[in-house]
Length: 284
Image (cartoon, rainbow, N blue to C red; front, top):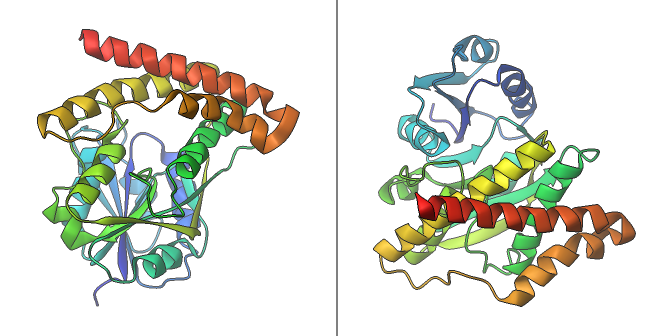
């Protein structure tokens, strides 16, 4: 019996997080799901974690990064609909139903779901989610004008995903490959649809050092993205107007009032880290 959909999750050396993820995924309201965990060359194989759950396939590859892992999983999938998420996420019970409903069987649709921060007490995780929420608002996710969705909550046709070549594996870090994929999807005549009903909770325990590294990597990824876009002659804008950055910094205060001042400071820090990452990549 062909599965209703295939869930692809790359994982590297996080067995406890993966187990929590698989427990959450077991409660989906959509039956007959194929779950494919792609072990991206973890020092200790993740197969024993997967074996404790029903209907979970574990595929192991040499360490090549999440883009390659997602592509590998998609090639091995049996479902006509693919859903991608990460092992530090916890899909809510109706997550898959939300993705499938928004997709509606339309090959040209790339669906992005809603991401909620699962670590409200962690200011760095909160700030990181604030930035994502701001981008979805600024670019009009609900209006259908969003140029990309984060790869921890998307769904699409397997046929179209493979025909487009999947994620670009030339990106050196787990940064901006989802932006490139969304832009390429739209350039090839597809549309991006946002689903408020497809919700995951994101448990990303950041520290100040990890927060800096995350956004430094985003800067490196942005540089590589611009090189890729230049190579194919894309006219996608490279920089946003000053009003974008002002709104980004003020957004946490707009959302939470005086409690958002910390988030605004971290938003400034994220942009400094991105500039540093972009400059480092350019020098290399």
